[in-house]
Amino acid sequence: MSEGAVLPQYIAGLSASFGALCMGASIGWSSPVEAMITKSYDYGFPITTSQFGWISSLLTLGATVICIPIGFSIDWIGRRPTMLALIPPYMVGWVLMIWANNVAMLYCGRFILGMCGGAFCVTAPMYCTEISQTALRGTIGAFFQLLIVSGVFYGYLVGAFLPLDTINILCAILPLIFAIVHYFMPESPVYLAIKGRNEDAAAALQWLRGKNANIDDELKEIMEETQRQNDQPKTNILVALRRPIVLKGLGIAVLLQVFQQWTGINAILFYSTSIFEDTGSGISGSNATLIIGVTQVVSTLVGVAIIDKAGRRILLLISGLLMAITTAAMGVYFQLKESNPGSMDNFGWLPIASICIFIVFFSIGFGPVPWLVMAELFSEDVKSVAGSIAGTSNWLSAFMVTLLFPILKEAIHPGPTFWIFTVIAVLSFLYSLFFVPETKGKTIIEIQHMLSGGKVEKNNTT
Image 1 (cartoon, rainbow, N blue to C red):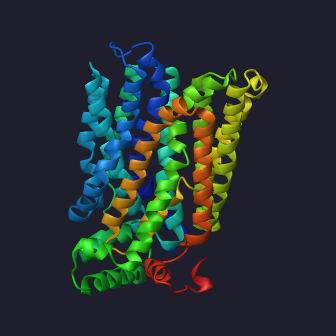
Image 2: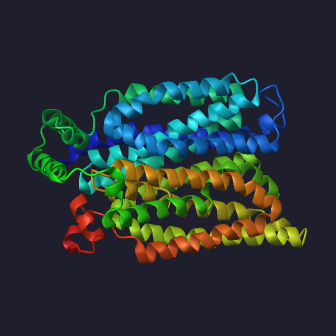
Image 3: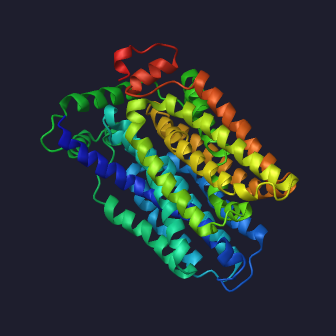
């Protein structure tokens, strides 16, 4: 395929991943508005620290409950229509946030925003992998994480300089931008082939590969794989999920998602402002979070650039190792600061540097790779539901971490809390080393063969 024909795939992938930017903005919203709504009462009514913890955590709880239902929806009405159907409830969520006059409205608004964002987290990665050539699948699949962190930075940026009402409005317009752009994108050709809409599948594939590209071989491969799936005896989804090869893939996908959250990323993002203020570094919380946001976007861009060259597994290994080192360093800082007051007054830079290094290596490994691998491991008959289960495990973990982090900080203090993240990061490194297969450059058939215990020839991995 000609190099110029890569552009339509990038456009469609970025368009679908724009939904992740909407979710990222909701995540980034929490940190800069914490003081506005708990200390300055910018909503016009008091909000306690405990209530703010629930406001933050309900976003992830909403994402948790929607993942499995949305897995059935994307098989029923399609990938693209499902994403477009999320826009009305997204707007309802932001309307509640903009005009909230009590805590219950904020709870409902954040929960709805989380549901919509969680739905994108299942649908967009699947869409991106299905529209991409094998050689581009890693890069386009990583767009999802790139847009999430860009959304987080957007939330930090508007939150640092603008009043609460303006922040909410600027976040609320993002789903509308997504709807306008993605309306003109094609449906996944894989989904269309599964539904027997062969002419539509060919038209979608031609759009994605360029009008002058020869799509015959790729279309034939899609049709053959679809036919192979259709020729298999129809089984209940619960039975299909119990197949050994599916269970193995599901174990890998779920554990990678769990490790992504339990190494502490969302706790750091949600509470970054208060973490930096606790260090006494002299850097304001808002400026520190902007530093975090820029670091995350730039390092994720690096991850997108190298993921199809370096491979998935090596990035996970590097990521896990450096996250363990940096969370250990943060734990040491806070422990010494508490046990020996004044001893760390000249080391306020240490947690800032540790968090930035943590985010760099999270962003090239455990940030994008779990979402990409989730969309790569499964055959079409179980992909939607299996991906939904993996997504549920991610957001349930995120909910638990964001809810427990302030409680643990209070109960066992910050140092031991960060050391818990250290232990989990070490476990993520060991799991990636011994159990995660390399999927770079492999077709779905090759990945399935590998999961079943077979080996793939070396020349298929490049």
